[in-house]
Structures are given as C-alpha cells and as structure tokens.
Length: 149
Image (cartoon, rainbow, N blue to C red):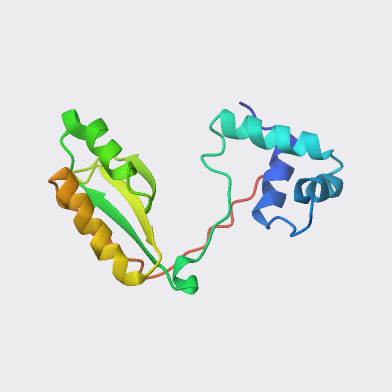
C-alpha cells in the first residue's frame, strides 16, 4: 500500500492523541476535512495492509501501579511456533515477535503489579521448558515519527 498525502496527514494527527469525545474519529475527520467513515476506512486499510502493526492506546503500566518488561528467549527454530503459542497463551503477554539473533523470540510482559512480572516469566519458563530473560526498562525514549503530508 502506498500512502497518499491524506494517509500521512491522518497518521501524523493520530500520533498526537485521539480526542476524548463521543465520536473521536468524526472529530479527527473534521480537522482533516474527512468524514468519520473515511477516517475509519483509512485506518482499517492501513492496518489490513500492514502499514500499521497495531492501533490502540498506549498505557504507562508503571504509572498505573503495574509492571512491565521486555523479555527474550532462545527458542530452537523447529519449536518456534509451538513455543510462541505457549507464550502467547498468557494474557500478560502483549505481543510476540521473532528476531534473527541467538535470543530469537521477544515479547512484552505487562502485569497488574511489578511483583507479578517475575511470576509470569517463571510460569512461561515452566510451561516452555526454556529460560526467559527479562530486560526491565532503564530509560524511556520517545520517537516522534512524522510523515510529509
């Protein structure tokens, strides 16, 4: 999918947040000269084409009293899909992706309390039989990607 100027303007606008109103996509559309349906259709098309990997809110789990860590595992290639299914079965696992590295499976563990992170990582180890390497956040970085409209 090739992004046109309207898609790029929409992505730029959505990165600034969505208005907390009854019809947020109508409000965004009004700002950009689009209908609510056009905004929703464009977002759905970009998501469907893989231009957007996810579309949803981002929460600061730690500020809400929760726990969060990036974790990795070294999974034998022949077992990757099976182990991915086991890891993804945990409701605390936000997403999971493969990397070309000795640690080839990476995922985010998000829990209701900081103490629960270690328990979930231990449960994943028990279920998969493989060690989990947690990488707690030491610093937060904000990348402000913008597209030329």
